[in-house]
Length: 181
Image (cartoon, rainbow, N blue to C red; front, side):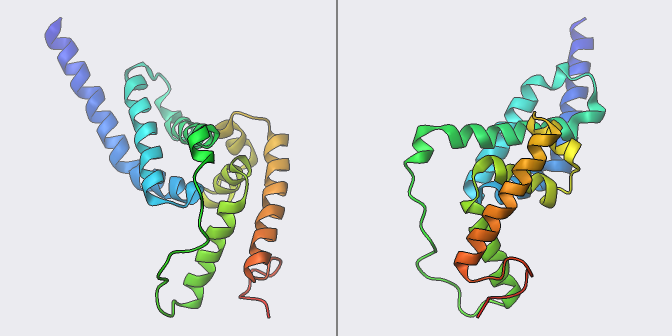
């Protein structure tokens, strides 16, 4: 029986490793878009993958793993933002030494990331799932553990907050064009 358990353990660990190798990049980029910091993104992914490792042997419906892991990542992100120590952190507007003459497209991406950081966490999570991960309303609702109506309202509110934050940076909010004059 011990030999069978060893084989089963080696098989599920191999499946887990293959899953992580295939999805780690997407998880990291999603986490980064959520929090805007590569270090925090790595922490979120590690928390998510650690929790996944613990429950992996009990997972029955492996076809739904992507949604399950996205939901775990969203919960880790939202949970982290509820912690009091996160609320005491001070966010600064920019880095001390900005890069010299970045391309216009790069400037827009930085402006959108900065504006996204100003959007409340739940709205930001919905926007990332809907527009970064290209999920439907129903898939986003499943990942967030809420109703489709909540996803729709949070999307609408999040887009308004994002447009307002972009307007403060001087970028056109309705056209998606470049800096406004």
